[in-house]
Amino acid sequence: MQKTSKLGKKHTPLIIGNWKMNPSTLQKAQLLFIDVKKTTSKKNAIAEVVIAPPFVYLTELQKISKNTRAALCAQDVSFEKEGAHTGEVSLSMLKSVGVSYVIIGHSERRAQGETNEEILKKTQATLKDGLIAVVCVGEKVRDAQGDYFSFVESQLKSMVKEIPKAHLKRLVIAYEPIWTIGTSTHATAEDVQEMKLFIQKVIADSLGRSMVSKIRIIYGGSVNSENAADLLEVGGADGFLIGGASLKPKDFTSIILIADIYAKA
Ligand code: PGA
Image (cartoon, rainbow, N blue to C red; front, side):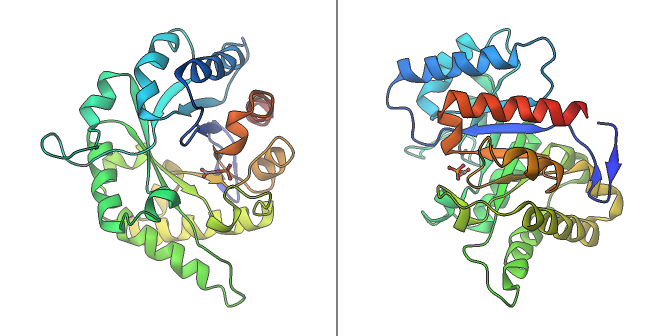
């Protein structure tokens, strides 16, 4: 979008609801999606709103996503094209049911053993196929020495250099410090601002300054309607990856409206 600050170009806020393994039935998922649909259909809606439901709900949600600005996202993907990969889902399958975003390397998947190497392959395949890759990075804990910076740097460096420059505009980095996920503790706006600047430095050092504005850096970890404005305005987050609050229609709607107001300012 238009304006710039010390944190760089102001992008249209990207608000992603990561439903994880919720809700428990298709019917509940449809109801939840209809709430999002209402908010994003408002005349002056601006934020880019994306919903990441469990795989099994995608096809049905695609049917009700017609004429809405809410896009569909997968929570993971295989880098393989087809074949003997029990339990896996390919990019062509996702595209055929209207998915245009993929979350890659969420800490809950990394905890299941997903490696930086696999995350890179998934990211490369996703971007090559024209989808938007939302790649999660973030430290487990914060230490007084600041080692968490080098941890995030190692997660990023193993990836950004290996992505063709032409694909970088479809890369979104989600900074999700693990100590904030699913808790009531979010990173402060100052923490987010500091990490965003650090990530931008890693991108500039690896790829050149001109690439910084192409890559959106969003924040995830206990985002709610109380902290969202501060995280956008002071933290400089280009949007959010939201777990718990995305399952609460009132909260999620408020966050989208906050993002719309921020975008207009
Ligand atoms: P949370 O989850 O908003 O519930 O902390 C965020 C995430 O895991 O993406």
